[in-house]
Amino acid sequence: MSDPLSKRRLKLWIRLLGVTRAAEGQLREFLRVRHDTTLPRFDVMAALYRRREGLSMTELSRMLLVSNGNATAVVDRLERDGLARRTPSETDRRTVFVSLTPEGLAAFEGFAADHEAEVNRIFAGLTEEDIELLTEILKRMGGAK
Figure 1 (cartoon, rainbow, N blue to C red):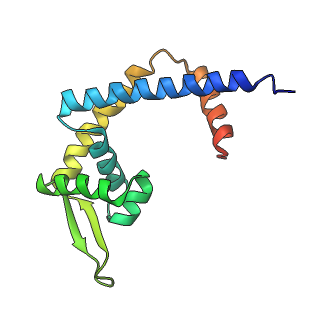
Figure 2 (figure 1 turned 120 degrees about the vertical axis):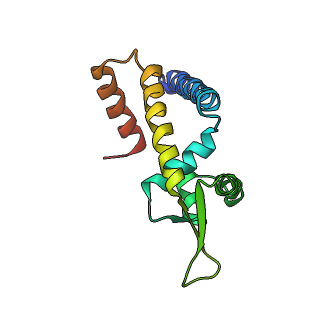
Figure 3 (figure 1 turned 135 degrees about the vertical axis):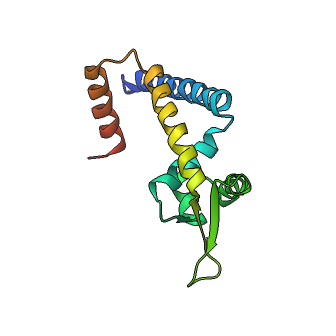
């Protein structure tokens, strides 16, 4: 006997994926048009902004769930643009830390404020109650406390 909720769960998954992809697409376009940047670049800068002391490339890749190669390519461009800097570890010559420069910090603060406003616009149709309910459901799904 099949689970009567199985098809509904599948439809829910497809709907969640569609909403996520649509929002991500809008954010990608917004960052490209408004700030001449990419979502991966924004994500790397956000991770570095949260960890001002810097991250190793391995930590950065792990945080962003991307390969070291992908993170390296983004960091290369950020460094070339003067927004990030690499610093070799004093204790392990195989490890390199990356952090935002003062220019990178300032640029990210501008990106972040606009990004938040755009996310707010995208989800403006949700009430406070909708947000509370969705947050609770997603926490349960993810096993978060």
